[in-house]
Each structure stands twice: as C-alpha cells, then as structure tokens.
Length: 366
Image (cartoon, rainbow, N blue to C red; front, top):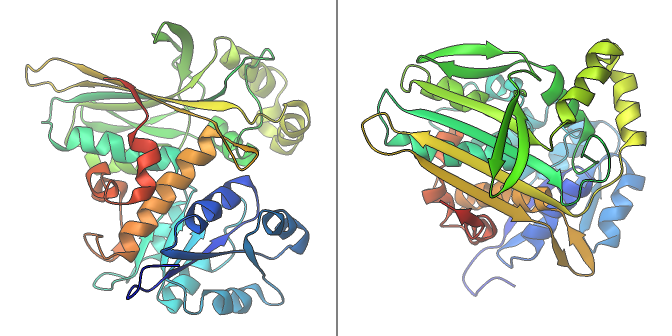
C-alpha cells in the first residue's frame, strides 16, 4: 500500500501482449500505483490474469467502454503496438488523464491540438527507440552548437545467433515491418533529409564484436524535427548481426514481399523463433564540433529472470521508460501540459523516477 497520506495513482494499460503485461507488472510492483490491463478480447486478457494482473474487458461500443475504464484514472498507456483503439487520445483527454504510448504515430500530435494551457499531457513513442534513446540523444545534443554530429546505432538482438537472419520474435512483428518498409528522417548539413529504409550498410565493431547497421524508419523522427537547423548531422541506424540486411533485401526486393506485406508478416511470424533471451545495444558517437574530442557511449541491457520467467531486455527497457514518463507526469514534473517531445523529458528529469533505475545502471563504457 502507498505511504499514509499519499494517494495511489491509477493507470490503465491498453493491450494484452508481452509488452503491455511487462508495463503493467512494472507499475504493479510499485505501491504508489494501481494498474489494470484493458482490452476488447477476453481470451487475450487471460494471460494477464494468469500473471496476477487486474483486467478490464472492453465490451460493446469501444469508445464508451474505454471511457468507463478511464474514469478516475490518472494515465492511460497504450502498451501494445496493435492496441491503439479508435478515439483513445480524445477519450483520454476527455477523462482528464495523461496519454502515453509505445508507437510512433503522427496522428497523436494532431489529436493533441488544443491542449495547450492544460495539465493533461500527451507523450507518444515511449519505450526503447523512440523513447529512451530519443531522450539520451536529445540530452547529448542539448549543450552542443551548430557543428555537432551524432550517430545513433541501436539493436535488439538474440543473445545467441541461431539462424541466418540472426533474428527472432522479440517484439512486435508489425513494428519491425514498419521499420523495414517506411522512410525515415536524418539531418544532413543541418537540413532534414528523407532516408529510404534498409540502405547505407555500415560494418562496425562494438566491444570487440562485429555488427552491421543500416537505415530503418521512425526511431528518431521527432528528434530530427526538433534539432533540424540546430546541429550539423544526426542519423540513426539499426544494429544487426552481419548478413541480416542481405537476407531481408532478398525477401523484400528479390521475392517482391515489399508489395505483399501480409505474406511477409505471415512468413516472419511462422518462420522466426520466439526469443526470450535478448539484449539491447545502444551506441552513441558524438562529435561536438567545437574542438572538443569525440565521445562514444555504449550501453547494453540484458534479459533478466524474475518470478520464474525471463523478462526480455526490450520489454525491460520499454517498460522502464514508459513507466518513468508516466511517473514524471503524475507527480507534476512535466514542463507543461499538452503534447510533449522527448527532448522535453530528458534523462536528468526521468532519473527522478525509481522506474528509471533499470536503465541508468546499464552503461558498459563511455
């Protein structure tokens, strides 16, 4: 129970997959929060119930049912890549509760129009990247001048490579396909540039291990817009084991699956093994551009065993960042209401939440 004299914060997590449950369990472990998992499919909710989580089945007219679930809530977290229900942002605003999600959706900014001057906050794209990595990169660039250059490389990888792709089902396949098939933004010579996905192959070595990196969509687009015209270069690439890109280009280009994404999804869902023991690797190379030496920050997050189950690294990172953001919003530490960019929620602020500790302790080298 929360300490005497304090009010327990109520959070509703939308979704019923592993990521949503990881977010809910993170809140549930903190006595300051009460949490429920809500979804319109009872069968999907049974997994959450089996893990001891409170559940709410959304029935009938979804918007009305969701409004009932959010009555009295302090925040709602869309914790499933496929669970952003129609009207959820508007419903959250009407209920007076903060909205946080783990997907990059440009429509959320549009839905937040008119919120300026209110205490309700809208923070999309929380989690690993975008999210935690966005905040890290923004904090690094905040004190730099117009000549700064930052290269960001992020990978979610199986601990052990067991197939030619060197990959498995560790998070949303829908999210992965979106990254691999949509364009992304970068900053080149101070200007925004559009980058096609799965291009600009780069081979690199991190902590004595070889990887490849290539362009993918969506991870830092919001940050690119924020720093356009303020830094010389900012680019993002995804890390994979060597050879991954060649096989993906074979599937998408040679076999034409870029035009048949439903078949690509089915192939990946049925062909890739489910991976629980994963690792997150984050590399940030900053050249300040003012004569100061370049700095390289390398971080890893490992899967952990808790309660007889393995918690994947990507779910740990996603839950830690999303829950930290909600904590900051609910305790009134946000700089303002309305739509918030991650550059406005830097790690220096998020560290005030105990949820952030599992991320802050993971530096390998700097």
